[in-house]
Image 1 (cartoon, rainbow, N blue to C red):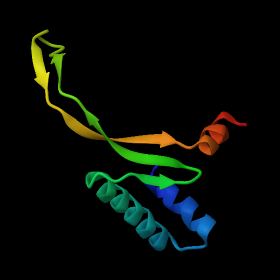
Image 2: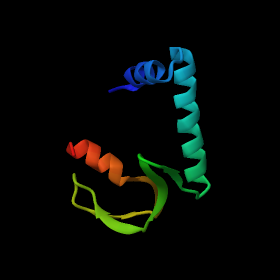
Image 3: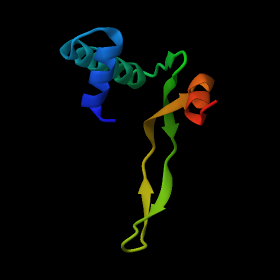
Amino acid sequence: MNKADLVKKVADAAGLDQAQAGAAIDALTETVGDALSSGDQVSLPGLGIFEARARAAREGRNPQTGETMAIAATTVPAFKPAAALKRKVAGN
């Protein structure tokens, strides 16, 4: 499912027009991104938890040359699905 498909499904389910549904999805995406960049986590019951995780600096290898290189520490977004979502995906 791409964004256009998601917008159509949300619009149909919520009784909105597609422009309103698209704006709501864009606002959600922006809000979650802002929260994660400020170190907060976002919990959506029934869906899961979005959080920022610190990834430590490490040593890696260039696959073309085999040369070792330093990979800097960074913060990455992560998602932990809720139990209800896991059950739905599993078909239970």
